[in-house]
Image (cartoon, rainbow, N blue to C red):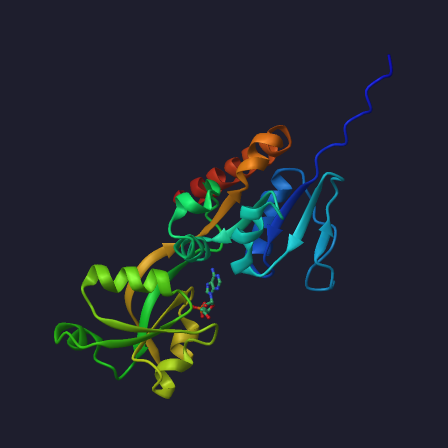
Length: 236
Ligand code: AMP
């Protein structure tokens, strides 16, 4: 009888976006014994090798991470809760997307907020029941927030530089991510509502979870341990 051919070890593809998510995921990967061998800021490569022949990183736009993982272009990925909520809304709910979301990684933390020009009286506009023009990239989050508050809004979808919208008269308010608050301050905007805290999530393709369970397990466990250690350090 012929010996069975050795099965190739499954290749795991991890989708990350450049910048804060990439940088803050690196220590979690290190905790799982994975070193990314190229610096995305210095290389034009979109597929980065790691010290593990069976693990590679693909660099995609932040808002494309859930799409890559959902369709199996990547087995797992890291993206902000904001990105995930908007993606799920596009699909009519989390159940239709079917991404396995095992972990809040507690990284890339910031908040989703409403901001207006310093001279705009937001509380009285809300009290009077005025209809507000709100510019944002995060239309689903903004729609849900203002609907729950009973405020009528016209949402204006933008893809970047939201801060400009109130300054040019395009909108009364913006819904955007705020970290230090420096960008708002530099543009004479003030935060008037905090919608939700945001952090990065690990998402896993459901088929990969079944078919590549053994390869995924050490990574998921190391990410979970690193997340717990971070939480303990923050609480200390
Ligand atoms: P900051 O000036 O530190 O408050 O940062 C605000 C700017 O950075 C805004 O343009 C945000 O859209 C962006 N930003 C802040 N935190 C994040 C994050 N975790 N992920 C993506 N963009 C962010």
